[in-house]
Amino acid sequence: MLHKIINLTVRDVRFPTSLQQHGSDAMHSDPDYSAAYVVIDTDLGLKGFGLTFTLGKGTEIVVCAVEALAGLVIGKPLQEIVSDFRGFYRLLTSDSQMRWLGPEKGVIHLATAAVLNAVWDLWARAEGKPLWKLLVDMDPKQIVSCIDFRYITDVLTEEEALDILVKAQEGRQQRENQMLKEGYPAYTTSCAWLGYPDQQLQQLCTDALKNGWSKFKVKVGADLEDDKRRCRLIRQMIGPNNTLMIDANQRWDVGEAISWVSSLAEFKPLWIEEPTSPDDILGHAAISKALAPLGIGVATGEQCHNRVMFKQFLQASALQFVQIDSCRLGSVNENLAVLLMAHKYQVPVCPHAGGVGLCELVQHLILFDYICVSANLHNRMCEYVNHLHEHFTSPVVIRDAHYLPPKDPGYSCEMVESSVKRHQYPEGERFYVVEVDVSISQSVNKVAWLKGHN
Image 1 (tube, one colour):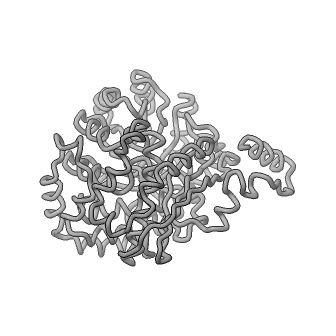
Image 2 (cartoon, rainbow, N blue to C red):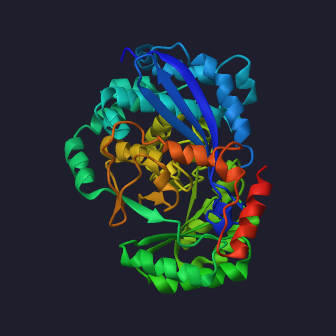
Image 3 (spheres, rainbow, N blue to C red):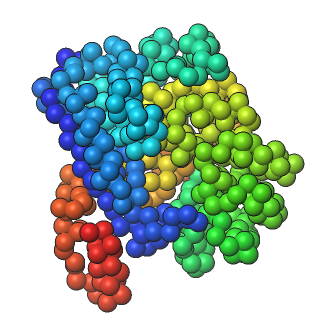
């Protein structure tokens, strides 16, 4: 714990997922899964790794924001940070000049998440534990001391948070053993990206069913008749007893969302995700109220700025499924606050993980939630996508559609250095070397991608 931070570097890493339409949805037709990737160096040689997820263009802006925060981190001993983690969180989020860029939202908050993710990774490595185990082994008072309760005490006080954590101590070891044996239930988004043709969709669903998947999410929102056809196709393939969710990625106005989803009710979706603007709390509340008689819940959170917005979503009964994100919020610290508020309101947490590195990170948070907060698996599952895990030194392990708890120390953020060098923008070879492909069309696509990102 005597490690002193002596340097912080950040790199822009981009993967060409748009070439195969991986990640495509009604609002993001050509996403390139990317990350602002942070590495913290200490005087004793230990490193911490962190990232925040982006979709390609604009990652360089997040990189600039991380560099602007670096001066608040370099020179700090790890012990000083973790002994007052709430204070350190506020140091990063409350700088009297930079907070104007947020506060606690947008690019500056994405950068804050990347930095704090690296600090948490460093702490877990210093303790020789995976992050979820570091959290599980903490005294409840220490957990509470990591959370900034400013702006949320009208819903959750420190005393209430401590009470939740203390009560959840009962049965904690049994739940930890259960997770180590069985893992945490997952659902897949990888079968039904909006840009996939029917043949690919059918093959992916067939393969997923064979591999034990029973919960599937479908992207919707571009064309109602096409949505009906694709939802019907998938429902027929997965059968009436498996779970189906739909995701519009913020495509509709409120009235349009209610009408559109009502037209898809015959396919029995468990939820509609991001039906409208992620900032429209009262709009989500109206949609929730209108869809309740149809048995369809509302899920959102992957672009919810901070704990304050989550507080209001919960107060307004505007969502039935909380979707935390390990990079949109201010790292572990702020996610802890949201997990505790969700528990108080008895709303299940089903994290967002559709992006490079998000599965690796958020698995730690949802394990902690079950073991030390919610003690409940009803209507709870963590998103999984099958892309880009090979670029991490400790990739997720899925068995029988369950996340198995990570064993390596840290927050699972470290990327393979050769992958970083190859995909770093704009220096990486991916951006200036066009490989010869057997297929001319593939070469043309690759050249087009390279030109579009220079």
